[in-house]
Structures are given as structure tokens and as C-alpha cells.
Length: 395
Image 1: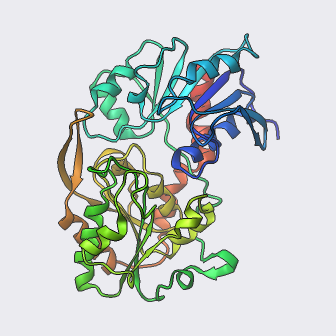
Image 2: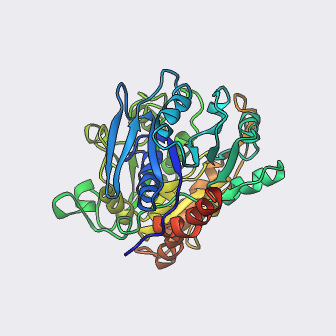
């Protein structure tokens, strides 16, 4: 089958291709499809490659893979590596595509074209994000309707393109390694009520955007009247990345290892296969994904693609990711001084109420959730959003 070909060159500045992070996954989806449609593509890494220029082997050819710079977000390396890459294709129209928090690029000296695929996780627009997005050489792409609405209020034009998921993998899946039923693998009774949290444990040591403390406190309160409830936490348990010490936090809210399962830390060092996550989502009666604010929130969509209902925040990006069988949690404004903008902090009582509603609701696979998540399938996102955008951008 012939694929439409476009002429152009894009350096994708983000995590490394196929690194087991949300950004790494999106970079893989992007680079594969850029190459598939004839666009020259390179990966400028800010996490996942150090020390040498490498090469990515994709189903559609090879792509250059440039290492991290010396500065924390590699904004020192982006202009250098992009110019190195485009030197081989001097006649092609080109751009750097940034997939990361945009405020980190304010000191970057680069006058070439930038496509800023922008996460907006606050409920008000941070001034440093506004500063970068209003550069004359920046074309803004927002990954959520919330982000687009927020930028419209600020007079910033943008194109909406959501993150994509692979629905050939993220689908109802009943077993894990060696075809073991997932609940058997986790040690969770078949008739128990299983709640799962799939979130990164990264923070500044003081404020945790993923609201881990609030969620664990809420589950502890909920479990006092629902002793058949279990919790699975898919996150780094230590505070190695500035997050919280999860075992310490669990002890503080009165939760014990008898009813809380934490992922295997050693396997987590290299990442679990996506099929494992699909099995975890499917085995869960509800996924708890509440935070102070999300720029997108891939697990919210992945869980629904597996037929699992979600509890999530009624603000920022996740409000628009909640399908008809979802439960939305309320909150109140929370000031983020470093970004000079507001998050929302979730209300613990609202989380407890959502857990109670999910407990009393029908269980099993939700067809409504699966149907809702289909619109985020990566190939649909590519055809519906990226291809029209790229045709115009490179015209």
C-alpha cells in the first residue's frame, strides 16, 4: 500500500525513542510515522542517550539519534544537533519539534522554525510558557482541548493534536507473563475490588503534582468501610527522582502490604512491556488517576481502551479525557509559586466518594470506555490531526 509522501525535515526534541516514558512512547509514534510518509526525522534526546550520536532502527528506515546536552533540559544541544542534521538536506524545509514543558526553552538561542507540542497542566497559563509560545518562530500545537482554550484566552493561536495510544496493544488483556491470570500474579482475589494507580513518582521533594499523598489518604479512608479493596501502585517506590517515599507514605496513612501491591522495582529500572500494563488495567475495577494538573494523561486513555473505568481530575487536560463511564473529582485552586500559576488540589472527600460510586457500579469491561478511547488510537490521531497539519506546515 502506497503512503502519501511529504517533503520536509523534523528534529524531535524530547525523550529518546521508545524509552518507557510517556514522552518516549510519543516520540516513537512520531518518528515512525514521519519516516513512513517521507519526512526526514531525527531524535534530539533530553533523556535516554548520552555521550555519542547513535542511530534508531525503525520499521521505515533509520533515524539519527543525538545525545543529551550539558544543561538539564538539553536546550544547549538542540540548535547544534538540528543544524548538524539538516546540513545533509539543505533544500528541505525544516523544523524542531519540542515535546516537553515549554518554559525550559526560554534561554535557547535558535531562530529556526519550532513546532511546540505543548503540555499545559496548570489551570492558569504560566508566564514562562506564555513567553516561549509567543516567539515569532514558534508554531503552537496543543495536546488537549483544555490547553487550546487556555491559549485562546491569552490570544495565542494553536492547533489541537492529542497524544496517541496503540489500541492494538491497549485492549482487554487477561493474562501477564507466561499466560498467568493477572490477579493470580498480583495475589489479588478474583472477587476483590482492585484499584490501580499508574503515575510517575517524580517531584521536587515538597510538592507532588501527581497527588500521591491525597490519593493514598483517600484510598485508606475508603478501605475502612470496604475491607475487600486492594490497591496496585505502578510507580517507582523510592524518592530517587525527587518524589515521595511511597512505603513511608503508605505507613503514615495506615495501609499495609497485605492490601497494597507495588510494582517490582528491579523490572521497573528497564520498564515493563506495554502488554503488562494492558493486563493491569484490565484486571482493575477502576484506575485512580488524580493529580494537581495534567498536560495530557496517557494512562487515563490507555485504561479506558482496556475497558477500565477511571477516576480523574475535573480540570486541566484530564477533564476532556474522561469518557462516559468515568468519575470526575473536584478540587480547589493551589498556587504554584515557581510557575506563577494555579494548579488544583484534589479534594480527598471527592476521591473517596468516587471510589464508593465505582465500588457500587457494575464491574467488568466497559464498552463505552473502549469506544471513547478509540478516537485516541495513534493511527487515527496521525490521519485526523498530524497529516493535515504537516501538509500545511510544509506547503
